[in-house]
Length: 499
Ligand SMILES: *[C@@H]1O[C@H](CO)[C@@H](O)[C@H](O)[C@H]1NC(C)=O
Ligand SMILES: *[C@@H]1O[C@H](CO)[C@@H](O)[C@H](O)[C@H]1NC(C)=O
Ligand SMILES: *[C@@H]1O[C@H](CO)[C@@H](O)[C@H](O)[C@H]1NC(C)=O
Ligand SMILES: *[C@@H]1O[C@H](CO)[C@@H](O)[C@H](O)[C@H]1NC(C)=O
Ligand SMILES: *[C@@H]1O[C@H](CO)[C@@H](O)[C@H](O)[C@H]1NC(C)=O
Ligand SMILES: [Zn+2]
Image (tube, rainbow, N blue to C red):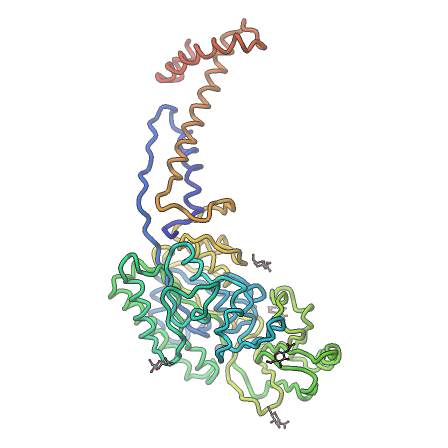
C-alpha cells in the first residue's frame, strides 16, 4: 500500500500522542485527528548511463542546476563494485551489493546453471539470472501499487513472476523523447491506472564516453545535450501538471575514466590462452582456470604486471562486497585506474571505460533530486548508492526488502524527518491510519491509570489506621473513596489535597 509517510512514520504517532496528552491537564478533552484518505506519492528514477558526477560543472548544465536549487544534490555517490552498468543499475533498484543481487557483471557465467549471460544477447532475458533479488518495481506492485519502466536494465525481464505494469521492451533506437512521453502517459493516467513509480534509462553519455574518452573536448557537446534532454523531461512533466507532484531523482550507474594505448596489459605475455576461459571484460576480468590449473594460472599472473591486481576469489578485498556468489569467478584480474586488460593488442580498444575500484572518484555518478519529499537547495557530501533503495521505499511508503543501504545515512535529503527504524512494524499501512486513535486510547488509559495511582496514594496516606495487609477491608473503602476523589479531580488537584 502506498501513501505519504512511511509505515514507520505512522507508528510514531501513538507515542507522540501519549506523551503530549500526559503533559496536558488530565481532564482536557482528547481531540482525535480525523483520518484522511492517503495521497499516493509519485516517484520517477532517471539514469543517464555513465554521467560522471563532475560533468555537471564542465559545461553549463542549467537544467541540472535548477534541480539542485529546487532540491538536493549528493556530491560523491559511492556506487557498487564492479562499477559496470548492469550490476549498478540492479543495485539502485534493490539496495544490494552485486554479490547478493546476483547480477555480478555485464558478462557472466553461472556454473550451477551452466549458462552464460551477456547484456548484448537474449541470454539476459532468462529469469534465472534475475531471481536472486526483487527489484523495487515488483515490490511496489506486490504492495498494491503500480510501476512503469522505460528501458531500465532488467525491467523487461520477468522477475519473480512479474513484469512492470507498464514497460518498453529494450530497443536502443527508441528516442529519449519517446521514452519520456510514455513515462508521462503512465503517470498521467486516471487515478486507478496511473503508475506510482517509474524508472527511465538513457544510454548516453556512456556510449560517447567510451568512444571519445571523457577528456575529449567533444564530450562537452554530449553533456550539454543530456542537460537539454533533462530540460525536455522537466518541460513534459510541467505540461502534464506533474512537476510539483512527482519526486524526480536523476542519477547514473557509474562515471568514466580516460584510457590510453600506453596503458595496456596483455595477458598472452604471461599465460597461455589454453589454460583458462575468459568471462568478463576489462577492467575487471573474471577468468576460470582449467581443471587443476588454478594455482598454475594464479602464480603466472599474480606478480606479472604492476598495474594489475590478481585475486583468488577468497582473497577479493572485503570492502568490495564482491565474493559470495557462484557467478564470481575463481580468479579476478583488476586493472589500475586508466589501464586496460586484453589478451593481445588486436582486441578492440576504447578511449574511455569504467568498472574500476568503486572508491575512485572517476567512477562516481551524478545525483540530484527534487519534489515534495526532498529538501530544497541542499547539498550532501556523500552517500552509498545502495542507500537510494531504502530512500525510495520511504518515499513510496513501501516496506523495503532486506538490503545493504541505510535510510538514516540519507535522511537529511528529506523534507520531513523519518521516524527512527522500528523493525516490528506491520508490512502495510491501512488506507486509513488507526494509529492516532489507538495512540489516544493508550493515552487515556495511561491518564486514568495515573489518576487511580495518585488517588490511591492520597487515600492510603489519609487512612493511617487501616490495616495494610487486609485487602478485603481496604478494597471497598478505597473504591468508595476513589469515586469521591475521582469526582474531586474534576475540580483540580488542589481540592483533592484539601480533603
Ligand atoms: C555446459 O553446457 C555446454 C553447452 O552449452 C555443454 O557442452 C557442456 O557439456 C555443459 N557442461 C556441463 C558440466 O553440463
Ligand atoms: C525499435 O525502435 C525503432 C524506432 O522506433 C523501430 O523502428 C524498430 O522497429 C524497433 N525495433 C523493434 C525490434 O521493435
Ligand atoms: C591476437 O588475438 C587474435 C584473436 O583474438 C588472434 O587471431 C591473433 O592471431 C592474435 N595475435 C597475435 C600476434 O598473437
Ligand atoms: C580502492 O580505492 C581505495 C581508495 O583509493 C583504496 O583505499 C583501496 O585500497 C582500493 N582497493 C583496492 C583493492 O585497490
Ligand atoms: C547485504 O544485505 C543482504 C540482505 O540483507 C545480506 O544477506 C548481506 O549479508 C548483506 N551484505 C553485507 C556485506 O552486509
Ligand atoms: Zn559503459
